[in-house]
Length: 152
Image 1: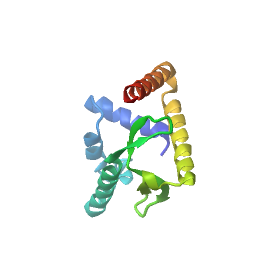
Image 2 (image 1 turned 90 degrees about the vertical axis):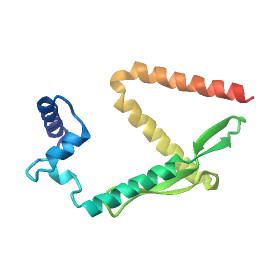
Image 3 (image 1 turned 180 degrees about the horizontal axis):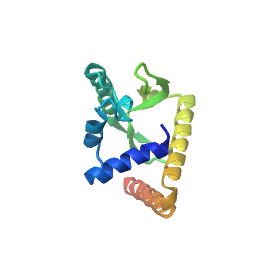
């Protein structure tokens, strides 16, 4: 489905209900005739399995550890980082994770590449707000410098 059509459907829902939220969209799309019906998983067993995988991924990503950077700065990072993405059996992306301290130079370069892609996606997403994006990046850098100064 094209983005224009998707926007049209969501705008129509907003216009009719005065609000746009996930609950109302699911309610509307539950009608088999709705144009977004096929974009949802209606089999409760399959949906439950997908939800548990989502929850498991959140648990994995929630664990943080302290690491010391080469400049002696101590930072909190995720304890387990994705080593690579793969297509999952349930039509989404799945990731394999490894403890951050076990990652090789190759894996770290892959993570660095992914970080660069993520930053580029953020820059593109917020292009209309470039001034705010730049300010927030400066603010984050200043916080990091402040943390480094306090740690020394």
